[in-house]
Length: 365
Image 1 (cartoon, rainbow, N blue to C red):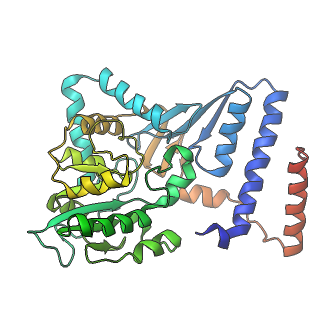
Image 2 (image 1 turned 180 degrees about the horizontal axis):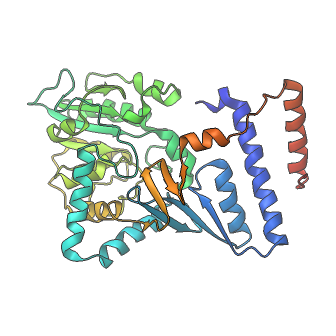
Image 3 (image 1 turned 90 degrees about the vertical axis):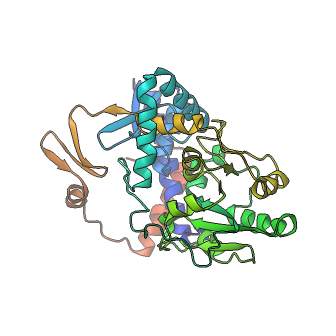
């Protein structure tokens, strides 16, 4: 949602994050703590733990899912979303793997995604209608598919994912590209596939995407049953701002133009324009079949990274058993303490007290 309309939530998150950061730095100084573990590192309160450890030079291992439900992965003193370390790790995994096996693992990863089988998360394409193309599709035309990502994920990570080519956002970029394409090559048509994970989401970005119009552009909404992979197979080329579809296209032999940041940006697999003019030119040009090596390296990593659990037994990406105890939705629901909603005056008092404490860098028991 728009932070302007959720100002109280944002305020509480900021207070909590700063409070955790200051309190943990105090504890790290007072105690002989040499190693910390934290989950994911992207959420406000979790990021505070990582930053406090970095500030006090204490090793912090960020843990998250591995390539499937039976594996986890640790990131040393960094978030899993940092691009340069992940690119290096992709290379290391590829170089260390058995040559005959690594391509099989990569192919299985891409085939699983096409089939809607996501071993470590949920699939967003399972409910789509197989082989369905959007209304008005012209098989004899020059059709270019743009796969849009949810922008809130980029913003939450930090400047590492800032789009230097189109800092105004994907919607504005698509409008600008469509306008200039009319002059350069009016025969090219953009089919913009909004990511299915934005189904039911109402925020400035989704509203902005819905308002895109033009003679050479068609928006495919997040809840549309149009088959993502049928669109991939039928189009001339793919354009993304970082979506996994950009590298999936390369694996399936489709030219791919990358207009943003991604873990596969440095894999020499996609066409990566450095200016808006180059982007429009690449979209309107007939591009050669891409080299598949970068896609294979990326797919091998995504299909094999992580360490297997030794005690925990996962049932799915969200639930599992640990030493006979079932951990999952029902467990956490049962253990959650009922919290009485604070009255407005008490909430204001708590926020004032927290602000005062954080300003003076002290913490109360």
